[in-house]
Length: 314
Image 1 (cartoon, helix red, strand yellow):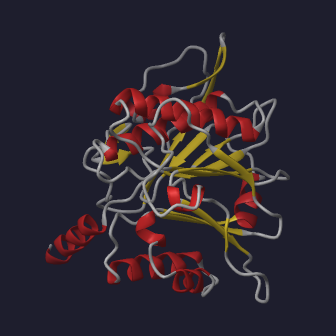
Image 2: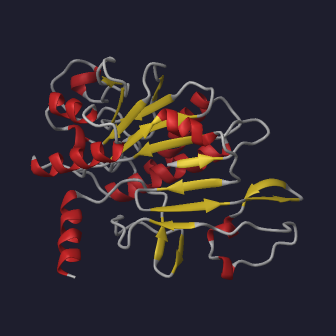
């Protein structure tokens, strides 16, 4: 998740994204990491333009970056949601990761799938599940951009390691609890029990709460995965507003910037002693073994189970 503060031309907004490296192809983890990193970076650069166009162009840049890495022999899915106060919620999807929506109130309509998988079966009515589109395919990519109906106030982004389960069971779990934390635990537990064929990643969003939180002004950019958060301050210089890469370093290592009278400190919030991030991910900053990454995919179920067993034995 990335939160960007208001600028002269834009309201504050948040983007929640999920990238799933493609199995059976090379460098899946690196493709997902590069794709989502370039996607977020491009959003920051284009934050002053129309939100739907911003997501589309950012996805195209991510696609090109992954193609440059893997030359079409590797790739990743990419699903994202843009949320800003007093604006429509916008979705973007490439591949077979999915976005679902529903209303939290009882008696409302059920779970709605807001995306179509980019495979033969769903795109053209065939029988294959091979992807026709993915982030990293190169030329010809057409990202799917849509608007979330106003009646929906909860959203779920899922990789195929989550939504492979029986559709009725999946929908029943999504709507079974008021607390999204409980929904997340139930989905991942069920995926483990059913023997998920792939890594299981998901993001659950209460859009009303997030829109309310965005009303409060915060300086800079916040990047968060399931385990850590990194906050980057805006710094004004003679060249205008720019992102301070110095703010990604620990405070003690930061040089003095003559153009900034007071540089906000980086806020580190640790939610896990042993983050289950990909072993191949490169941290953006490191301080006392705290790692920060803008990768949003979680570990595989096998890796997670192994880490749990290790923690219990410790």
